[in-house]
Length: 126
Image 1 (tube, one colour):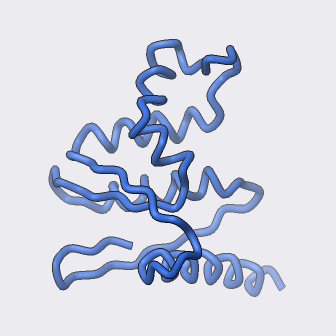
Image 2 (cartoon, rainbow, N blue to C red):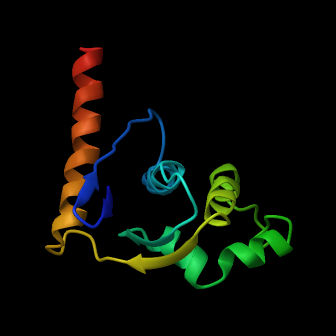
C-alpha cells in the first residue's frame, strides 16, 4: 500500500511456491517501482527480516562479503536483495518495523490484500 497525503494506492500479488520472506520483499520492490521520481519514503513492514537487513546493516555486510553471511552460508533471496538495493538507491528510505496482527489498520489491510490475492489465485485454478 502506498500512501501520500490523501492519496492511497493498494497493490497486491501472488506467486506460487514461494515464501513469506520473498513476498514481503516483493511487496517493497513493487511499491518502490511505482514511485515516479526520487522520494523520501517511510517503508513500514511486519517483516523483521526485511527491516533488519537495512536497519542493522546486514545488507552492507552481505555485499562486502560477496553475499555470504557471517556463518559462511550464502544469503537467501540474493536476487531480491539486489533489486531492493537498486530500488533503495534511488530514494531516501526509512525502514520501520510494525508488529503484525497488533491492530495497525494499514498492516491489517495489507494482510487482507495478501490473503485476497491467494484466494483469487485458488479460485482461478478451481
